[in-house]
Amino acid sequence: MAGCNEKNCTCPKTECARHGKCCECINFHREKENLVYCLRDLEKKS
Image 1: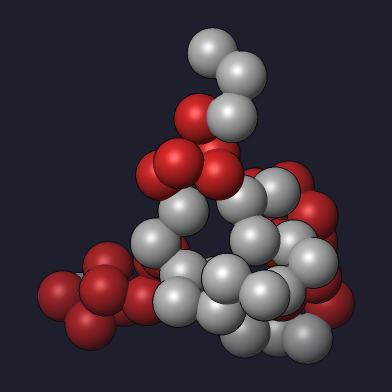
Image 2 (image 1 turned 90 degrees about the horizontal axis):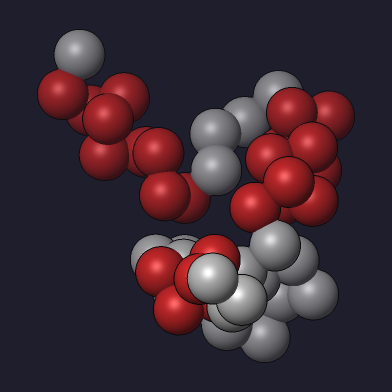
């Protein structure tokens, strides 16, 4: 399913070079030791 990450990306930063590129986004945020936008709501629930 081509483009599924881009269609389902919930990050509001649509101008970001990593928008819709989950692996790149996750790796970027791991290096900075913070959580990707799409998983922040899960952190709030715990």
